[in-house]
Amino acid sequence: MRPFLLKLGATALTLGATLASSLYVTAHLKNPSAPLQPTVLASQQGRSVGGVTITPGVRRGDVQPVTSTYAS
Amino acid sequence: MRPSSSVEAHHFEALGTSCSLFGAGVTRSQLLQGEFWVRELGTRITRFSDHSELALLNGAEGEWVDVSAEMECLLREALRAYELSAGLVNAAVLPSMLAIGYTRSLTAGASSAKLEDARPAPRLPDVLSLQPGRARLELGCGVDLGGIAKGWMADRLAARLGPNALANLGGDLRAAGSGPDGDGWPVGFAGVTVMLRDQGAATSSVRRRRWGDLHHLIDPRTGLPSRSGLGEVSVVAATGCDAEVVAKTALLLGPGLATAYCAAHAQAWWLS
Image 1: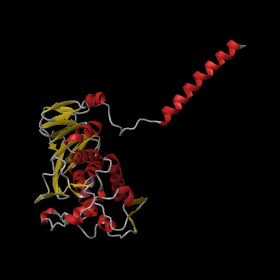
Image 2 (image 1 turned 120 degrees about the vertical axis):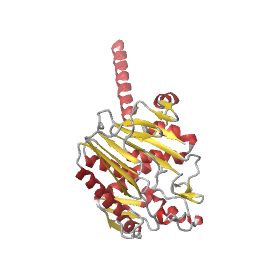
Image 3 (image 1 turned 120 degrees about the horizontal axis):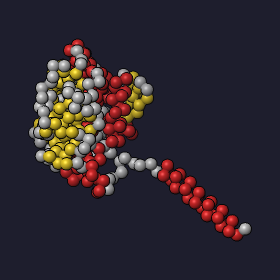
Image 4 (image 1 turned 90 degrees about the horizontal axis):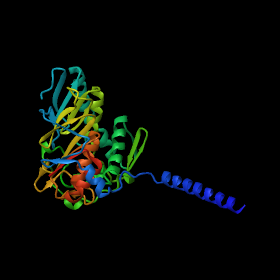
């Protein structure tokens, strides 16, 4: 009887921990405004060309632009 | 690269600045309709006319006023910009704009400044209330939409022009679709060319719209023109409005924090 109770207790503990952790994660969604860790920041900073930082989400071109962004 | 023959281009002056529209597979008539839309909406959201929709809201003395669908969207975007910028892009800076002498279009010149009247801006969500078709400003408050309007309009205009178009309203632009040759719209960005696909770009600067020691970019924390140490910021982001908000926020943050902010919110940036 005692081994069975121990197994039952261990199983309940495992399931409880799993349930509690999933509830905690669900209730604490990623905050996109949270400060980034330096390693993540470095990976997102992309490469700097002539003072311009371009991440992988933007492709450079070698053609004449049709228009530009500028201060007005 | 010059626009290929299938790209129609149209340039005009509106909103106190130069505007350019491009579309692949669009007609000249569509671009002219786009210009009309810019001019018509521009007359409603300007604060330089006593009869504009914005002027009526600013002058309502705390009463609810009916607003058009576009104005309601723009005001909601102003609230979103406030959140995205942690309060730095705050449309409620109008009293400070007036205090520094920016009371009319700068083509007519600034009026005399009364810097003692400038004050930190209130939190926009505290003074601007919105309901479907209606808006209300707290008594004594006013909003200026110049900080987000061009980017917001460029986003809508690009969508109106078709699936493959670019709208540039005074440097705040939105590129939609894959561009004239399928590899993006080539856009000049701080001296380099970037190929934009469904992205926006904008530049915020204190080097234009200056008079004397003053300029138009108000820091809502002080109510005075920004002295962050940055003079100009260009940004590529997901939309034209986001690019405008991120560029302005980075400029107000100054060199110490702007890079980290841009890394979190922009896809390309240039700080000067």
